[in-house]
Image (cartoon, rainbow, N blue to C red; front, side):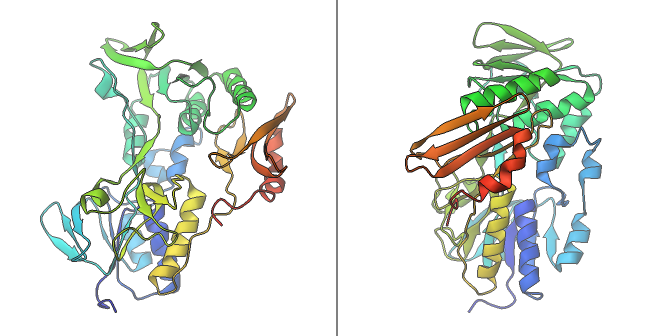
Length: 386
C-alpha cells in the first residue's frame, strides 16, 4: 500500500488537470492532492480562447476562478509559477527547477501540448504569434489595436475559429494553408468548399494551396513571401498549424512515447504509478485534443486513483467547430475506415455521411441548418473506443 501521506501529484492545471482533481474530490475528500502549474494556475476554459473576441472577452474576464480559490475548493496544494524539470519513476519523486524534490503516491502528467512552429525565414519569423493558453491570448489581444490585416497560418479548426472571431473586431483575416480546402482533416471536399464559401461571404479570405516561406518586418507591419511566389502584406501574423504533445519530460524519464505519452486504457504510462491525460496523452493509439475525450479520461482515472481500476471508454464524440458564419459539427471516420462520403446540400445546409462498405454510418459532417441532425446521427455511430 502507498504511504497515506504522499499526494497524488498532477502536473498541469488546464482542463485535464483541474477536472481530474474535481473528479477525485467527488470520490475521496481526504487524499492529499498537489497540482503544479507553469503559470498562475487560473481556472479557465481553453476552448473559449478562439471565440473570445466576439464575446468581448479579455484574458482577465476569461478567468473563472483564481488558483487560490481552486486550492480552497479542492482542498489541494497548488504550486503556481513552478516547473518540474524531471521525475524519477522508480523513486517516485519529481525535481523542481530550484532543485527541491517532492515524493508522490501517483503522478499524473497533464502537461498539454505546444504549438508547432513552422520553419520560417526572415527577421519577422520570431514575431509570429500563437495562442495556446491564457497568457498567449493576452499577448495576442494586446496587439490587435489598430490592426486591420492578419495572416493566419493554418486552415484547420483553430485557424478557422480565430478567423471567424476576428471579424467581430472588423479585422480582415487571410487564412493560408497548403491543403486544397479548409478543415481538410475533418471535412470531405464538398463540405470544405461549402464551409469556405460561407466564411468568405462573412469576410474571411482564404489562400488555399499555398504556405508562407518567410516573414519580414516592415515599417507598417510584415511582408510574407509565399511558396507560390506571391507576397502578402499584413499587420500581424498568427500561427495555428497544430499542436505537438509535450512528451519530453516523460521520454527523459524513460517512459514510452510516440505521438504523445503512451498510455493504456487505464491511462497508465509505461512506469508504475505514472499516468497521462489530456493533450499530452496517446490513449490506445489515439491522440484526441478535444474536451469530450478529456472528460471521459478524468472520470475513469479518478476511479482508478481512488481504488476502482476503470478503463476509459470513448462514445461517439462529434466536434463542434465554433464558426458562426458556417456552423459545423463533424465526427470524422476512424483512420483507415473503408467507405465513402455521401453528400447532400442546399443553400442553407450540407449533410455529409461517411458510409462503410457494409452500409453502416462511420462518420458525418453537418454544416449550416443541417447541424440540427447531430444527435440523431451521433446515435448511429459506433463508439470511438468501446
